[in-house]
Image 1 (tube, rainbow, N blue to C red):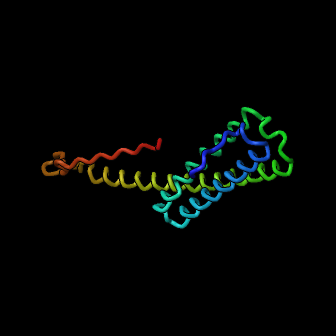
Image 2 (image 1 turned 90 degrees about the vertical axis):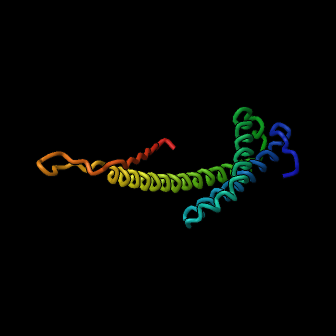
Image 3 (image 1 turned 120 degrees about the vertical axis):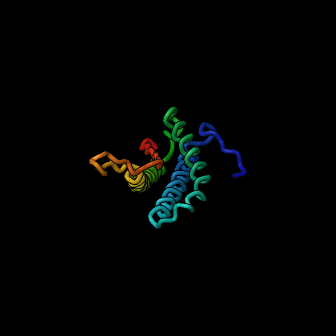
Length: 154
């Protein structure tokens, strides 16, 4: 984007509403494409969307913050435009919720896989204790050591 972005205060109420409407629709499209890539098992292609997603998210956040701080920026915009904006924002929220559900499911599956691998490695690394000759305790695991930690805060 080669043009300089104008401040929300420098736009007419109609121009601001149209800009936020446009950005929210573009962001919704990016979120939907990302969700589709996740659903079709193409996570490596998501990286191609990140630059655009970050740019649109920042633009959207700046305009929404400006409007939140100064409601008069859009108070004279036509009611029809405000209605379209509210619909677009609602659609964006729905797309974000769907995307969040899919990302949550993917995270859960990934964590279960890691936990299963960690448990398997720890089972293999666990000492084999038992009674050997002359009822003596034996340890067949001589020097194998494997440690895997799972941090679910990610």
